[in-house]
Amino acid sequence: MPGIGEAELRLWQAGWGRARGFAPPDDHGGVLVVQVAAAGRGVEYLVLDADEHPRRIDAAAQAALGARDPWVTVPTRDPARVGDRLLEHGLRSPTKPEWMMSIGLESQRRTPLRDHYVVELDVASPVVHLRLRTSAGRLAASAQLAVVEDCAVPDKVETVAEHRRRGLGGAMMTALVDAAVELGAERGLLMASTQGRALYTSLGWTTLCPVVVGRLWD
Image 1: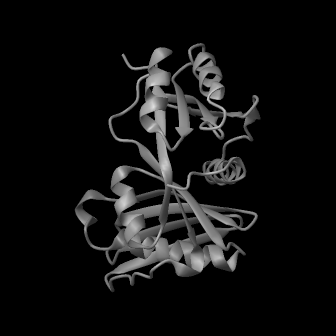
Image 2 (image 1 turned 90 degrees about the vertical axis):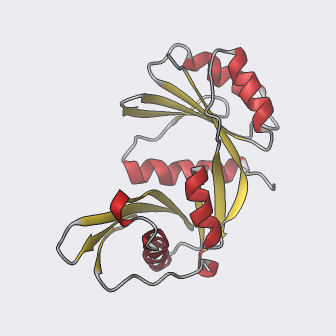
């Protein structure tokens, strides 16, 4: 896998943070400290270029031990090594990693929306909010996206359980990318779960590397 460079990770974090309304992170020597302030996810430590600077993993893990509900997020080409290194500091990782992915937006495959769904699109540059509703007005799926420079960062692409396996994820990504291109974006970066990775791969996104997340588990 090609991996992801420090500049791209900074772009992804800026887009993700903008989509969620976070304050800009503090940069502690290649570790971006993000105040998430969510239940079970208080502070996130994003380690930049961890494969070339492994001591940043140690610094993030040590800082995390003094934080409430910390996450240490490490994009890496060697997830087993990173997982072991985090474990040495008392941080455990889920069995399945997440994944950094990218695409040139013009090459994303298009998925049509089924007729009995309605798109609600709120484009408040540089953030796009999207909802799909049934003809009866019930929420079926939602997503958001932020644009930073020429980069679009999709986030929270979610489908209500009873509406899954109907192509709504692909339809939402089509609408999001169309809006992002209108805002000047040319490429996309996202972090995907294992389940989400299958969707994005089917749309033409490329996997850059796994992402290991270390947490304090009870």
